[in-house]
Image (cartoon, rainbow, N blue to C red; front, side, top):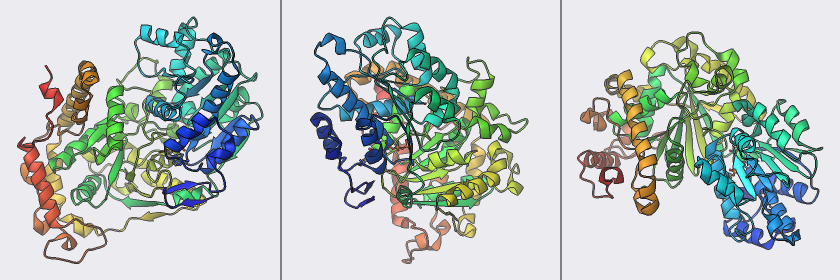
Length: 589
Ligand SMILES: Nc1ncnc2c1ncn2[C@@H]1O[C@H](COP(=O)(O)OP(=O)(O)OP(=O)(O)O)[C@@H](O)[C@H]1O
């Protein structure tokens, strides 16, 4: 394997897609989409599946191209099957099922599938069962006999149980379980066991179990779903070279200083490019957004509470570079490791442990959250320059998946993790995150895990004195963001998104251009807005960033001139003087 410098993608130069003897329509679509050479996981899995007809269990790093590794064999199998069918009517059957843990992933897999069936869309139809279709619409779409179903396990089970007249899986040829260990930790195991009863397992059904992290838990699934599978474990050796383009840092900071540092980093644009910030609860996401808003730093929010189509739109817009800063709540942790991490009296426990909720509580909801939500795993965020673990995840496994949102497909990226030292924990209640109590423990696990893979996590060296000057402004800004303000922001955003999602759905279908001007990073304003905080006075800038100083320091500070220009833009926006597209939410009648 070597790096293809031109495409900036780590590929297997020794292989090519032509050698897989694919249907010409599929091959053409692969090329049309710019996939010149297969990645290592693809060049390993595709021949095993197509030539040797083996079941495949694959473990390969995040961003290594696992989706194509199963979609290509799946489509090829369907096309071959179709060619072998003489009677047209008999070919309208479900031939492939792809199970994923979250709706976000279901949507993403379907759009990748659509790209690959560009030249054979009459032969291969897909249906995303998790896309919240009305019951009668779903039944009629199922009756059309889509060849590929994409779903979360619970939704598929529901359909198998309630719509047996509309769905037949007798002819099923391929079953994929993507992000298989997350499927398990999401508590879908029972659903999978039930689903297994409906499937023609161990007949002609070929299975793919894919993930970036695998553990012993999959043994049972393996024996239930696979026949002597080929096991590919690619992330320990060569493929790791891909990840050398990811630089990892940690910063030891107090709870309050996380906000301070975050403000300085983004206000002074110390990170070039798009950043994905992970927090551990929904409230913290809004708190951080409101705090940054105080300083004129815009961001948008992604969490399980937002309507599914808003979430999808946010990810799409972020991928199109509409937003630079996305604050994502990642509360999809792992029950096993979480159990030992529970803290008594932790009032955010329910929020931080959805699987725990799922297992312990009635499947009804104590929270409004969508349990099929998840963004740290599998979602292909494009061109993310930096992943910032504002709150450290509570497991080392989750860390792997979060940082995997950057440095994808051979690109480079940076991961920065804020770590609260135990002695600092709980000292500043309003900025405290309950899970931070274990930060140091998790960090040492992460360091061990990464060093086993040959990677180092470096302490991020910065001069705290340089940011000290900003402290009083942060204290001022932080005070304005009360718990009530956070709650109000949460409700306001939810209302806004519901409106956008439900009432305007039709409008947007008719006027797709308006969708582009529907921004998710609007200022929420429930906190007292202090206009003066949005400007950074020259005397506060570190020497390197002042306009009279030519020398640039260790961090790539923007020049004061640029900062001023930015501040002017924010000012204009606040005065509503921008001449850009009007807000469709406001205009809609
Ligand atoms: N052969 C290829 N050539 C160029 N780019 C590719 C190739 N295969 C996949 N990619 C791109 O690499 C990115 C990552 O692929 P993919 O989402 O399949 O990774 P993954 O291994 O499933 O990651 P994760 O474990 O995070 O889900 C995508 O943007 C995809 O379009």
